[in-house]
Length: 315
Image (cartoon, rainbow, N blue to C red; front, side):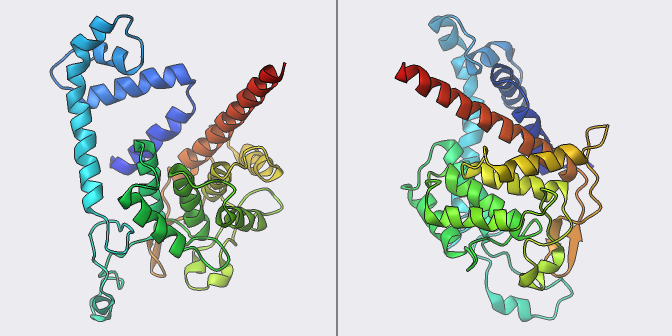
């Protein structure tokens, strides 16, 4: 059945593969088509995509953006109100973290509470950064503190909704960088080193769900397309796009891609309830590798442009 989060992830993956000018137009068409009803969306698309030639034309149509901006404002307010006392974010409830409930003998996988998790909190930080917030904002500062407090002794992060430390470390690195943490921060560098230590000879990454039961297995398991993609995106967020580790990870994905553009992945990399059951989301093996490959390509293009600009400035 159609799934909202899968649909969004597919859209993100597709967006990352488009040239910049096509991406702006495509995003504008998508936003207007889903938020402005009963009106011709073409003028608003032109405004959002930066294609309006005159100031007057833009002003005539800008009022149609109200529906879009209103939706964003309502969504952000909802997120603000979902922050827990500890500064983190859970999946469904706010401040539902009383451990005593886990001792009630219900047959509910011991899932009576919804505490803050590092992976979700980092994803909120990523959204805050995209919204223009910085770490100085009180909500972001509290969430940032929660993520730092939950970094493991060996400098990775656990994952609640994906297997496991590879997932959590990817999310944390992306969120921390999005909110403005410098890539040279020693805690970032240590997390990068953790990812590199767990890269396999084939260039890929993999982790077994058994790492929830036995933390000594963290970062270990059969290499998979989705988990390799997570590691690559984490490394890219930390400024590692042009490194041998990323080269090897990209080559692993290229070597294991099927003729039809997909990847095989019989392993379970989605987490339902840790230590109880795990999920195989069939699109994980497609959109995560696509996202990772596109992100590497874009970041390398950006670095190349910066280098070219520096060269011209020195001439």
